[in-house]
Amino acid sequence: MRVTVVGSGYVGTTLSACLADAGHDVTAVDIDPDVVAALNDGRAAIHEPGLDDLLAKHVDGSLRATTAYDSVPDADVTFLAIGTPSNADGSIDLGGLTAAAEMTGEAIAAGSDADPDRDTAARHLVVVKSTVTPPGVAEIRAALRAGAGEAADRVELATNPEFLREGSAVDDFQHPDKLVFGTDSAWATERLESLYDPIVAAADGDVPIVRTDPETAVMIKYANNAFLASKISLVNDLGNICKRFGIDAYEVADAIGLDDRIGAKFLRSGVGYGGSCFPKDVDAIRAAAREAGYEPALLDAAVAVNDGQPERMLDLLDAHADVAGERVAVLGLAFKPGTDDVRNSRAIPVIDGLLERGANVVGYDPVATENMREHFSGEDIEYADSAAAALDGAVAALVVTDWDEFAALDDGFDAMTAAPGSAEPVVVDGRRIVERRDGIAYEGLTW
Image (cartoon, rainbow, N blue to C red; front, top):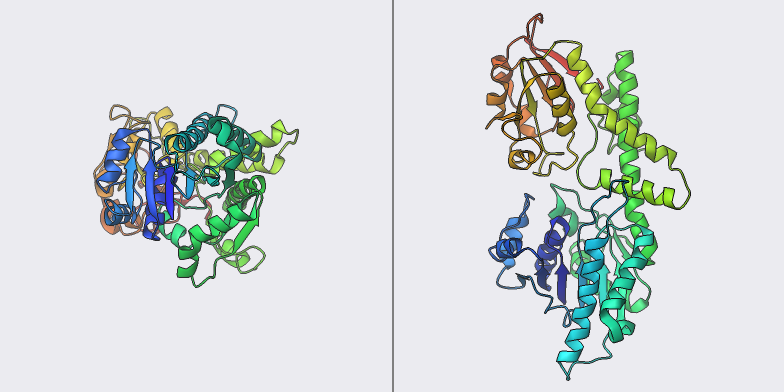
């Protein structure tokens, strides 16, 4: 099938590369010429395992990038994968997405006018891949129809939410837990099914498909992320209680995870969730609920627990040492391993708290250092080129991201030094990635 993907950010780039790999002819559209140039050179603007390999494999063949909407009229499916950033109140800003929808409609209309031989009765499917709340669907549909003008009656809007995890997005797309199609007609559903046929076939047909309306489809995405975020905050809340009782929260979690009503996933308590999805999506559905006259008390509590975990980490440090004027290492700057994304990383409030305490902060991450410089310049904190270098001379270390290399540091902690008045250097582990060892005062956040 011929596919146009409007927007080449994290979701759009993954979508374009994976659809090309599935055998479709894909044109990626983005307003940033630098992003377009990078894609046409086989490079992604983000760090995502396996993504550059797919781009390099298909660029100049079944995948190309452009700043123009010229491919839209002839596409079998056009995806809108434009970011929906948060407003100050947590609601989402649909400005970029509605503008792209309107330009897509204009391109469809212009294509019909420019080519007298074009089948003007042909229907065009436009699919929202962006994360939008149910009320937002109507706004996008209205913008699309306004742009299409007289061609509006043959343009149909559908929604197809993504469930990609940063660090494993390519694998998640190619081996989905589920596919959700939000459509208003059997024709649109069948077209999406045809598009995803190669992916379903590769999984031997064992992919659940949810067929519903556009608004319900996007609500499924929000409910999915809100549930997982709440599960993380609940296990963190229980973990904080376990810490007070001197109980290992991980032993408790392993036991309750055997209950198939609970399940073992997302029971690893620690410093909390971050990234672009959970915080943004939970805030957005909370704001939408309030707009509709409902107070989402449980989701509010989930956010409050998550926001408090970095401060609990700092409290554990305070119990061992005064770090004013002392070198303190922060290991891990990305919000999770496998990505260079620092959006809502728990390292940000941790570093803020250390700077408030007067510490000399040195940060290290295998891939996310440059992105963190947008939050903290080299004048604010020092950046090390290895975990060992960050630990050298530090009186304390706070482990924020569970990169595998932190578990293999072994002798790296030997280069640390005790703070004045302390018997040993302090390691506060927010991810249970470092083992207790002689020579350090080790504190697990919830164990």
